[in-house]
Length: 180
Image (cartoon, rainbow, N blue to C red; front, side):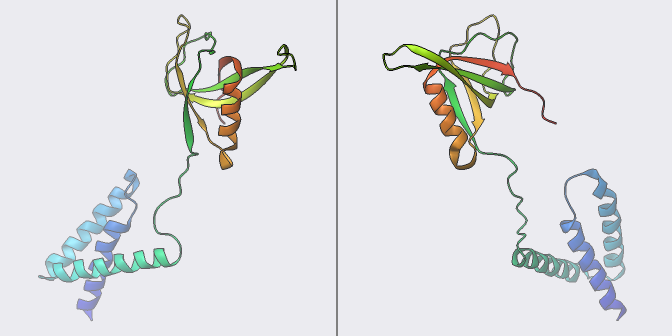
């Protein structure tokens, strides 16, 4: 009976060493304590290494089967939105300040609305949140500015963006407000 309890304890210990979360230092002391206990028990009952490893493997296998059977295979859902990359046309206006690569910005796209005779009757402004892929310097007129935007559900944002860029008269790059 005592041998069976020792085998169960070492098997559970081996399984816990692998099943405990691997990120963060808060688990390191628990891992060390479990490792010391498993090592002590296995050294006391000589030759129990194989039994402890086999039992630990069976516990890990059972845990994996339970996770898959109840809908948690271990892969976390992506927490990002799909993005599309664009190179903006030469209609990007010079910026007031310097912008770094991968900085979140707001793009204001001014589109000219023309009447039936081709004359500009009105201007329409579109606003898009974007992330720069090219650094911008206020002393240089930008020629090829690469940005990425979130595509949105069913690519609605992407379609709106491409339509606005196609008719862009001027594109302004502005500082984005920090997300709360």
